Length: 189
Image (cartoon, rainbow, N blue to C red):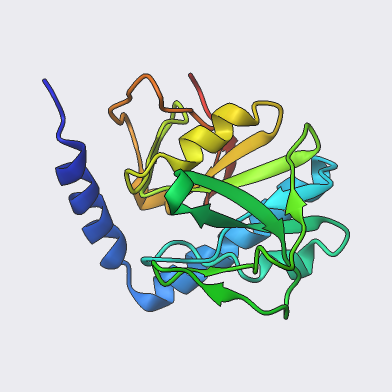
């Protein structure tokens, strides 16, 4: 049976939009607490994360809990089909991308290159227990993860969007950890 990823994405995005504001805020806060503990215990030096878009979990409180870590946000270069991460500190100015996503100014911010001491928080429409994710279909994260295999990868989604099984394609890169309001768990390939 072939699964239509576009239809599945629409269904799961609708499920995410239906999360009530109070439940969304509480789940986001729990996720931030679990991620902060995981990142501190993992002795990471850098965390590459994302600002919420389309009702994604809100991780904006995370950097304040990790004052010793370098933090970076993604910048998409659509003309090149690539994504890179640039250093960003809370309170620094952001510029709005053509998609309406706030990004560091790549003209003034320093680019961050991930290594084994880097954790990449990967947004997902949905995750499965094996670490495969359903994103928005652009492939930016899959390409980025393939180019930086030494970094630790953590998929981020609400528990209601962690499902038994998602369709996968050859270019899909599974994440090693799953983070939700229930905690941070190792994926099980």
